[in-house]
Length: 495
Image 1: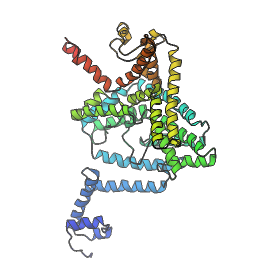
Image 2 (image 1 turned 90 degrees about the vertical axis):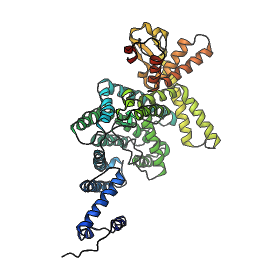
Image 3 (image 1 turned 45 degrees about the vertical axis):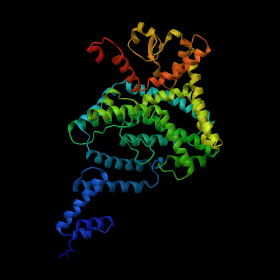
Image 4 (image 1 turned 135 degrees about the vertical axis):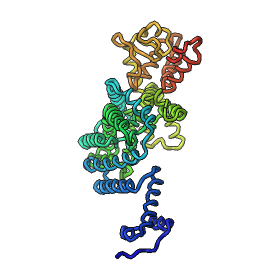
């Protein structure tokens, strides 16, 4: 017969639990009321840590999932991100996904919020043109960014092409199994929601009970966001990350392939072990983000914050998501286009001034950042000259050109457009060259009064990109059409 220990108060039980004094043997010897008190304490502690209410059975489930993560972590060791341990990386991310999905399922989002945010945006993306535009813009930006990396660094040869290819394969395998992209992951907590990379922050998950949430998980999250839009995005991101570390490690190692390969492997780890690996990884993530329009810019911050305001004001209805479903990628396209149109020169001059002020002009990273901004502007302006040389003045219509009212295809629209093969298309389809092409055509078509007017119109063309930012553009349109147009009918105002 087991000896019973003296009855303890809840406070003492909690203290013993925190100090690690509660063992399986001690629990077996506890009185029923003591076990009940311990169970209540455990539920409270877990609920407090996770921010959700859980039962003792769910606590046990969390404990099992934690053990799986620990086991996978031990097998992986310190090689998270190393292509040599692809299967171990996959197993670890799967265990992490199981835990994340379970925690989310215990904190389900309201059905209305899921419908307006997740399902609504997925419905708008559910067409062949969405992935075509996504892939097309990634190709345009990818080519320009890959070229600018080589020109600014004067490095054409990589350290280990096979290692780079193995990394790309591993990233795509992990993504297909888990929905997580490790090529742009800053830390182990940076897993985010599927679709957040290209739709922006504030994504609403569909985990939880009910058939509706299950359908949204399958159609919206797994098919539209993960496969239709996410898979190409991750493939390009992994390629740019690998290309960046492949080139930069060779330059850093001064042509020593063995040393450069070691640097590459270290940079691919989530937590590099060397200073060189840390520098290479940070630059590679930034390169991958920039080339896939998922980086943090002033433009994306502005558009996302404006949308967030609309969401906050309308609660679960999230009218911000409904009215402005896609803001991050379009905003970044415009911000990058403005760099390619010449803003990169101003940014380079600003970086140079700061470097001189703090006496860091000899810093290689600072020099590379200045060079990249100058190269972007050079490539953008050169590319724009080549495109505009093939266009007549009549082949371009600015956002507020009166002539657009006589063009049926452009009537009631407000975007800058060029005519190719008899059809009018928005300059936004030119990716990073959209803004510089627009600026040059503004200067050429509308700057007929001399060189000062040409400069002014070029600046106006670059500035038109800022007015076309998501949310900003729609707010301007609503202001013009609703607030300033007189004698409207109710039907006209609603339209």
